[in-house]
Length: 297
Figure 1 (tube, rainbow, N blue to C red):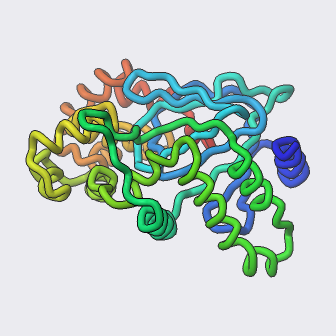
Figure 2 (cartoon, rainbow, N blue to C red):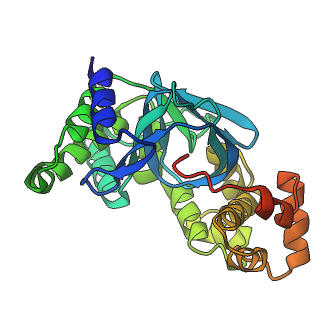
């Protein structure tokens, strides 16, 4: 029943296609009524909950589909291809996007680890993934409903918004994707911190040694742990982040040379070669065909 109530709130507050701020910082409602093919995107630390329709995210060739049965938890910035290929006016995509505040998530993760102890992985097991799907449980569903139930009264947002958002964060940390979220924000979050370090320097020449040093690991250990968490090698990940950012900027109207420079490419010919190798189109072809996929997080 709670999911249906959430859908009714979205239907009432957002009757037309688009995205809407709720009044709680980082929380948006969205409605998509036209199919959008999967296109390069960068998922920032976010939870996406769908109450109607389905969305897709492709990470390193692996396809993830999430709908009203599972929500997406992406605790680290990740280069993906994402879209809403089944959306239509008769079957709209409806949902809620919740940005994960690093400070609050870190506080909660550390509090949880202080109370129950840090994550302990069995010897030789992989780290929790940097992108996870989790079934809606009672705690998550109830917390999300209470969050979106906040009406149009600014006083409600001011008094209750932060507490209800914190409750939702806690439900995520305790849910099926909690290991991934706690790994990104709690003790032992070296890979997540390194991804943030890289994301802030996409137009700079960051090497594996730079990233390993930032994580406080040897090159070999860093490479192994990074690939466990993201499915990609550090170099492959960095290239995907740069090219996805460039593709998004080109789709948003920026010219190819500027997009290449912003992504850290001093050579436009190298940028064009790597862009075509990844997307099957030259940057010029992409700029003519691409449409900025609004709201496809």
